[in-house]
Image 1 (cartoon, helix red, strand yellow):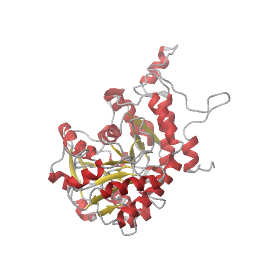
Image 2 (image 1 turned 60 degrees about the vertical axis):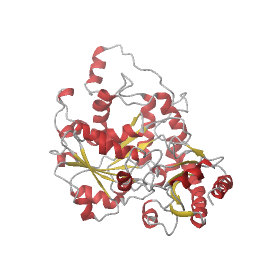
Image 3 (image 1 turned 60 degrees about the horizontal axis):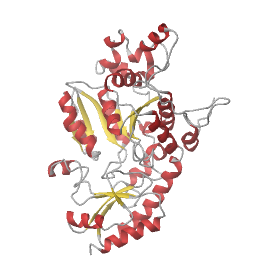
Image 4 (image 1 turned 30 degrees about the vertical axis):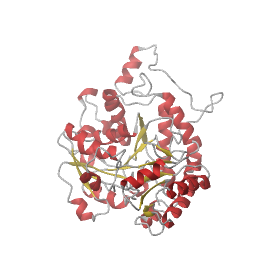
Length: 428
């Protein structure tokens, strides 16, 4: 039996094993198409009867090598890369939902995902009910309908930094015969592997910690292979009944545990095409090689910053689960014992203008839409990422008007603290 490699080794070596005389780095196959001498061989590829490459919109060797690494990191049977984290969440849900279906989702999720489920997917006939993830199992189950096909949550919510009780959500989902999809972007598989707690599908915005340098936009969908689709075949006809667009092929019967991922590639990528460029996947892979080192430093720096903010008289509150008195500390100790991430939320004593003045006074820390890379950055969600939401929707999503999202980078922590200290002096 081959011993499973540790996370740090998989970050460096997972997904790609060069043969004699081959490059040690995943090569960039920057080509739209692939040449064949035999037309029957290409026909077999189009019929999904043979593995291989014929058009990068569906598969590409560079993309597949990096996807294989992420699958190994999460402990899944397969992964597909997408052009963004938003595309990953859309594909993960749309792969098993159609008009007339229903989704239950935590309200503690990224504003873009909240809008995707609450507005855009409704235009496709897919309804969504948002629930408080801290509610009782009975309250969450009350949101389910006969047409519910998915339960969705984030390991660590963006921007509120709530920690999801994955095991509780998995039990609820499975009692209703649906999969649990968990967005694991902030935790990364270095700090949490949701499959080990019952999640069925994991998504990522690889734009964040996985890339780590703010160089590429991307996403990933990973399947555990654990959900028994055929046991609930009436709920998931797209996976469990013949697909007329592939000569009557039934994905789960033909591909077993890889049926879900195969359907995303062969159907959704074929028709919608949200693929990453091979060059972007190459850059993503460079980031993955140091992910285990960077996450440790992000957490180390963030703990010190959170402790400082927690003790500062200008600060009204701090949400960071590493703090022992944080509401989610017990859940972090269960699911994220090595640390959560570098992102925290806090509020200053004052009003919305106080938050804006503080941010405008920062000299090193960037005000930017991005989060979770090597540089420390800050954002005011109510004014920026969530500004399309009404006050009622902000409250429903757990976004306080004074909430500041701080993403602590891997610079020297004393420099980070010095910048925060001088900015706080301007709001006295």
